[in-house]
Length: 340
Length: 82
Ligand code: SF4
Image (cartoon, rainbow over all chains, first blue to last red; front, side, top):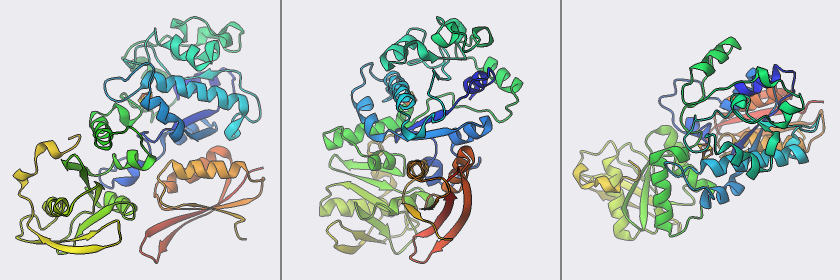
């Protein structure tokens, strides 16, 4: 946001591009969970574009991103976040969009250069002085990649050398201290300026990464679909055995979201008491389903009752009602909770 | 006036409804109308914001209670800008 504004203030026309990998924190989590919605739900990138008065193109890169996540040349960060490869990919994609005009990008003028809001030293993996040139060269943007917020600490890029922008009016922000950026934001008149200090996607989240690793291990393959990665953001994931796990809704919004998957998963819900919806991922046996029903009963309002009736819809179209005793809390082993 | 084109974004979570809308509008002519139906409440914020950012006119914005028990459906009509 700041980088764009700094460049716009130099009279350069800017358009924004935002990539949707499926792991982005923005949007759906807010949409799924109903509680704790303190701030109004909004797409942050769109909001920023509106504040700046620029166009924003949101690009679906779900498929292409799989290769970035599964085969990162530069490896992972603290969790399953392939930040450096991810940045290279995104800048490369931005170059391609600017050149081809795909997605209606930069329709009125062809693009001259690319800017990012990176700051040296702000993120351990991808925003280091030695990785900045890696992003520029591997993406093919080379010296058309300008980082207005730390440009003065980096060699002059073509936009600076050619005088398209004034290098002297760019910044030399460095490190994790965000005070200079906050001061700049204030001076530019942004009152509601917030950017996540952590990562921009779920892959930097330790619990999320644990669920993803668990899914890959259980399947014996690292293939994934959008639905898989979306479901990892929802509900409690409980794996009593390697071949199946339960996804139990934690509140109304999650239950409603899980409803949408009832024709692709075996599903369970209590009928004698109020309680969540549960999906079963994997290949449960009849005994496994009884166990699942007992676990689910533990999360229903009948958790202290002697008997809870659970309705089961199987994928083959058959269904049944089971009366079960809720599993005692101490029998739900800590190790069953994936990523918790 | 009825919408010429319709986009079913039900079941999709943001930002996918916005991405699909953006992709559809790319192939429409200025002045044409696109109807978008979605179930993610986030679209109530995101679709209007996206229209404002791109200068498209949001002609209709309504919440319909779906009889089939699917819950609320959000319906938009967007006129492509010139
Ligand atoms: S945190 Fe950001 S840079 Fe890192 S992998 Fe996620 S989207 Fe990419």
